[in-house]
Length: 86
Image (cartoon, rainbow, N blue to C red; front, top):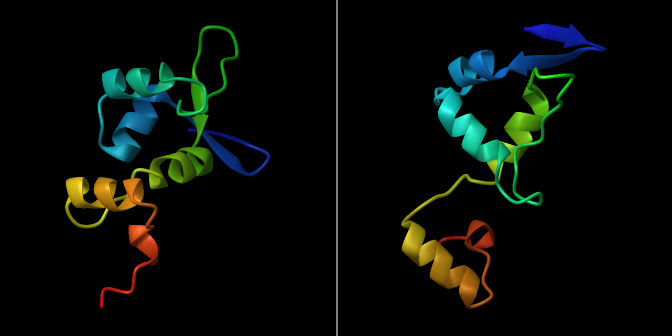
């Protein structure tokens, strides 16, 4: 792990161990469309990801409940994460 200016920069191998996913999966995340892709830094051929940026990016995929129900509620204009459960 490389620390620059107080932020942890992880290689893909380190990030894979941290996130419990494969390096191959991380490479797929890097090739998503720009608005969805994992933010990364590429000094030369090396790929580095800031741990705090990964955590923020990954948080958008947090779900609760059944994915199909959540998807349908969003399609209807509701925000399932803001519903109080009553």
